[in-house]
Figure 1: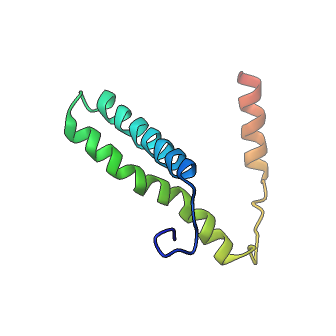
Figure 2: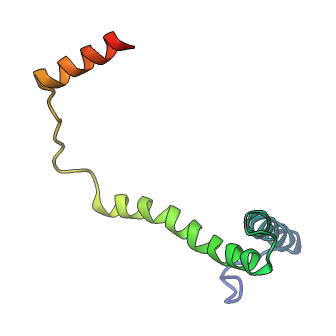
Length: 93
């Protein structure tokens, strides 16, 4: 949005954004370095997949907002067999 002129950021805000972005990607890169046997390809891959991981954490929020409240909610009833098993397990422990 800043390139179109719709939003103007000050130089301090740009620096803060770049530093936070570098820290975020650096953290993923460090994890890839440690877990990936200190190989560069694992660092690059983990930094590239950081974007995908963040996106996939946001998707369920938008899906649930799109679907709205559940229309039907079923409660699973307990039967005698379930209650007896729970009673037996509590007696054993």
